[in-house]
Length: 66
Image (tube, rainbow, N blue to C red; front, top):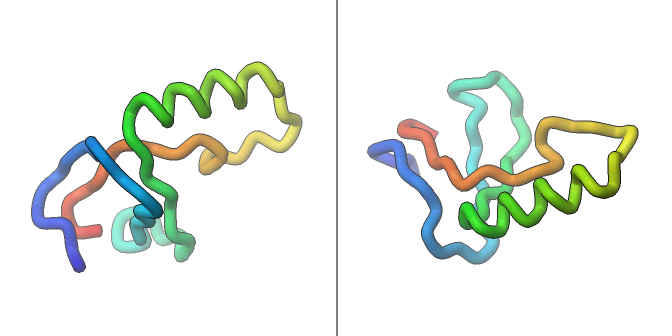
């Protein structure tokens, strides 16, 4: 299913987004609510992980056409 407009995740369970049409990356990205994303970001910063992948923290943003 293509998303017709940009939006934010308000409630979710197992939402994945294929943003390859925008980024060229063929991986599916995890989408979570804003609160869960902020919590995961704080956790990630506390861990100070040496492997900092931009996809370590999920995003609440859904983009049109993905």
